[in-house]
Amino acid sequence: MSLRLMMALLAVAPLAFAANLGVLRADEVALWAAPVEGRTVFDEHRADAAMNPASTMKLVTSWAALNRLGPGYRWRSELKSNAVLENGVLRGDLYWIGRGDPRFDSARLTELLRQLRLRGVQRIDGQLLLDKRAFSRISSADGFDGDAERVFSVPPDTHLSNLKVAWLRYFYEQGRPQVVLDPPLPGFRLDNRLQPGVAASCGDVREYAEVSVSGNGIRVSGKLPPACDGAASYVNVLDNDGYAAQSFAAIWQMLGGEGPRGIAQGSTPPDARQLVRLDSEPLPQALNDINKYSNNTMARSVWLTLGAENPHSGDTVADAQLAVRSLLLERGIAAEPLQLENGAGLSRRERISARQLGAILLDAARGPYAAEFIASLPLASEDGTLRHRFAGLGPRLRLKTGTLGDTRALAGYWQAPSGQRLAIVALLNSARAAQQQGALDALVGDVVERYAAQLQGQP
Image (cartoon, rainbow, N blue to C red; front, side, top):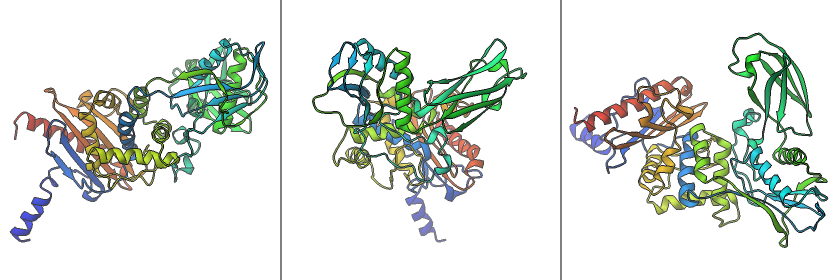
């Protein structure tokens, strides 16, 4: 190679060989790192390659949500009716307007219905009609059919409650293992076949309790030790509308209510009056759950809310994409190679470059919602998906993780004792990704150590 050619290559990519890739192949990893308080790139390798980011794509959704919706945004659930309320009887249909609150659960539904009882409603003579117009359609997550029964792949919905998961709660009574369904879905029969176990500790209750679902029956068998008193496991049952209907019915009956006569979907009539409204906790609460624990369903709900609250075409998915891309344009961040499917990273299609994701991290850290954004990231060795990683670096490192069969990813910040922050993105796409997580962690650790040394003026 001539000296002129070598100098030309170095001019194009002066930092391309600074990173210590260890056992990682150069063609399977992308890296980018830059100081938040600076204007130069500290390190990069294949930073413009289009990579599958897995769940680090949630950072794009979180950034867009804070900027487009604002940290004070709350999801509103409403109960409306145009029927007469007479002597405690609602003589017509009740409309439940859902807007995709990602943290809506049994406690929230109980409060919604408690307020309906306080309003004076004891019996609903008509139907319960689900108004689902907030989302015109649901973004896809193609290629995960084999994971359909796993909670992480539950699709979002305007009326999603408890992430469409019912809990089996275990306890001991008079020396016998017991199990109850929470919420107590009235359409299901729980068959308790548990026998006493003798293990000294419980750990994961699923090691002792085998759960099978057949039709409307849930059978729980196995040998449950007393140490599992208070343990719980989830079971994924029903479709979204069926789960919402049965949850409503169970809690309504528990509160002493009667009816409704059935359930269907329906649009709230213009003359319907509001009976109850219930606002969620602010957006950052949802982002904490999404990023610390990598909740796909909740991230997809936030993504769709971006489209619902920024309507242009009437297509929720297309409007969500537009909300993100227009924000990139406003902030001067390149629009390519970003490819979006559902904003959660539960995708075989989504793509981003390390540089593009890094630019979003810089914008987030320099923007008005930096505190909310950064606080949502897992703390190394302390919580979320980083609880058992990076013990040597500790909570000065905050990273969103990403995991798919062929992908491992990390993106976030390291803060020096002096206060300077380094934004870091490391993306690994490889058939051997599962075996290389340690190598990816080592790569990030090496970047941090070299940056720390630079701050201290060391060679």
